[in-house]
Amino acid sequence: MKTYTTPNGKEIQVYRDKVSAQYKIQFGSGGELPEELTGIFTNETFAETAINKYLEKQETKKAKTESKE
Image (tube, rainbow, N blue to C red; front, side, top):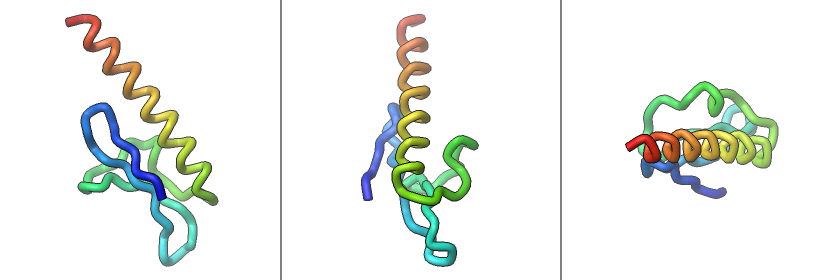
């Protein structure tokens, strides 16, 4: 499965839950996920879509912050 990296350098991973056989998302180094990445996904594509939307939002925030400096 793919690994994604946030603008701040944290790795995000999709994994298959052993109990439910559904997909979940976690930070590679641990930590609390933002609400939009929590929950259960029925397939890997849905989880990856959620991650991509989250990363796009974070990159936009970072760009706005950097332009203010």
